[in-house]
Image 1 (spheres, rainbow, N blue to C red):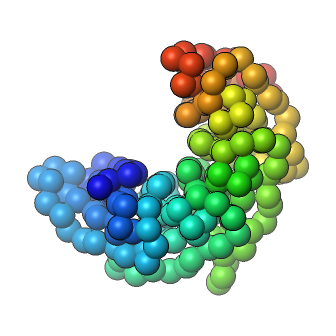
Image 2: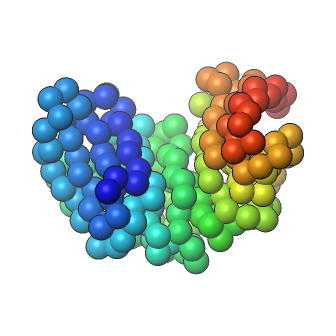
Length: 200
């Protein structure tokens, strides 16, 4: 019943999100289940640890993001805003901002370290489901891919799209920067993986 999974930054734990809304945390070395978190939703479609390993964010079919304290298993926040399922999540490298990508065609950036997480920006430009998001290592850019067959790169400070690639002929399921941010790779249902250059 697992729909999503994520390794902790130190590689010691594996989180799996399920159809029933539960997130199980396993010891990656021995495979033992150590904790179960309840999102109180159905279909955990995406899950990710913060880079500092302190938080686990889970995106659900109902458009909510649940943020847990990893050490205690406590549900810290439920973030609303999306009208449709959340396909992808990513934290900024400093663990301060969480990006959520949804079937509603939008990407939302959330400040998660305030007393109550707030949406600081909504990035709009895709015309179909947003399937993947990732920050660059320097936190300057966010990259996204979509069922609309495109890849977009956003300036995280200006909150605007600065680059669009439309080289794929089918939906683009995953996209990532290299460490220096000079290249990115996209993987599509058109059976191709493309390595692109990006000058910024």
